[in-house]
Image (cartoon, rainbow, N blue to C red; front, side, top):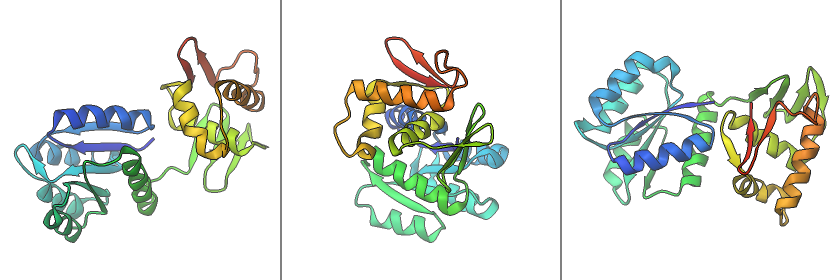
Length: 224
């Protein structure tokens, strides 16, 4: 699970973006100013995988923070810039930023950019574990206790979603949204139930008493 430092002084953006990123499986820590950002990088730099950095901060600017990050660490940086502010974009890239995205941004586009930057920087986690189940996303191989498991594309996608969101309750609506593209056809609530049952039969030691993917009654499911 990648850890993200969000450097942003707009409380509403911090609240909404933090919630969204956590639902997508990221760990999120936020600070509002230049001083706090620099202190956090100095103390926790080896634990941070990516910085989302606003240009305008409460007590300074993002350029100074980016310069310090790039001078002392290899942490990738994505600038959050005001829409149409070409100067900020160019300046940020010239200072070594790995990417930028203009405000207001589409959350899905931001996630895509973040994953791309993490892959390029080598910080993307390609091997995920859930109990004795191991998923190698680079090779597309899933094993349980060392033995390979054959999953359908939709079962694989479901498992990947659960592994990236361990400890988080995922609603059925959320899961349906996530597997829509993989299925290539309409997936209804009953179909989701069937696929979760099939996935449990392949990865659970006792599918009748699941421990890896648990049902949260009236809400959805939780992995781990």
